[in-house]
Length: 231
Figure 1 (tube, rainbow, N blue to C red):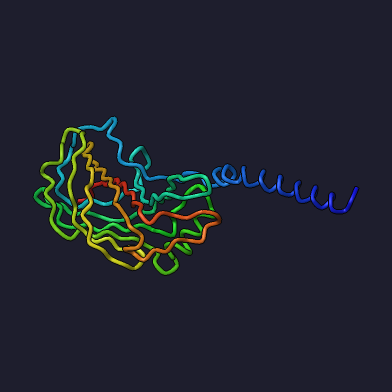
Figure 2: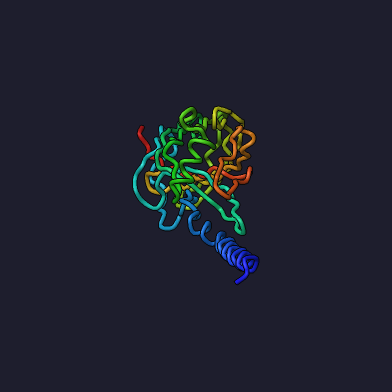
């Protein structure tokens, strides 16, 4: 066989192989990058009527169950030929709230960002080290900054909503926010959940160097808190 013909055939075979690899690359990347682990909103199914007043000191608890405490992030992750929602979460959340005369008078919540995880270890490492820089900024914090009337929160095991002014500190930057929070009183416990819109640029959070992937600037912080009364 002439040498030139051999070269042409070789190039043709390589081209076919390259096309085949490129055609399945989005599928492979999609399989390697799952949707993550999202902190969902509270679930009111099976809730009971409240058996204690709102007044007192409430502490975040890590009790197991449907509405266990959790916090994390949700962003769109862009891959070749695919766009998906990606989330990470952690149950390592601490904090407390104070209620007096049916008014939220103060509160502070802190999330251990070093423990936030999805379903992909490589993604988690990139998010912690290159996106959130958790070695320098290990926590995200929310502090209540103004009184909130809680008298309208239902006592019958249904969900109410309140707007809570506060300061969110993330990646070393603090911004004023006023998230709408869903509140469920059930028996002697309270569950609170919210999805806080987040623009990474507001907190100078850079996009990590993912392989063949990027992350939208717009996302959200997902929070669900199980609270128990301590006094």
